[in-house]
Image (cartoon, rainbow, N blue to C red; front, top):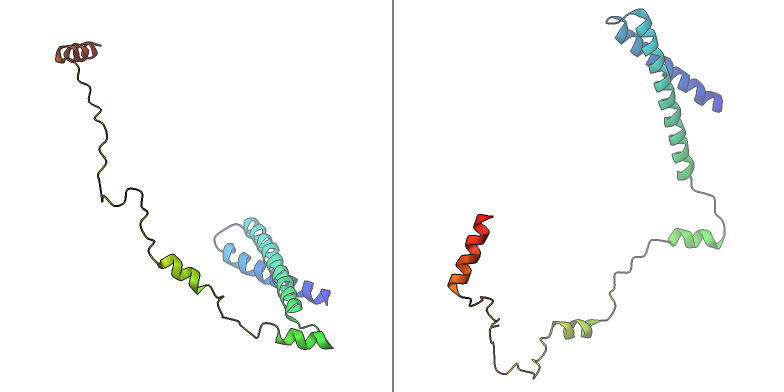
Length: 138
């Protein structure tokens, strides 16, 4: 079985060599075409070998193991039933959606806008002018 895998990979590599060599021979020297053909052989060989290995791994994983007994019947039923029921929590949801009554601490007066203290300093205009002149000179 392993010999067949390697033989198929070698055949793929030879096809890659011929394809690469023939496409390069018309445009390059013989030595350059041979080197590129060898690179093509190696790449196609590795790709074919990896493809065969991955496909073999997938086929091995997809084979159903032979089960006998009670476990086989339970495993056949596994995943066939879907429970779409939701837990009972309706009262909690209704309570969350209901508006809560206003608390008695200051809520009866209504809305009063915030009135922050003003941050403007009341200094002498002469003093402010001196400060501006001093900063302007430096």
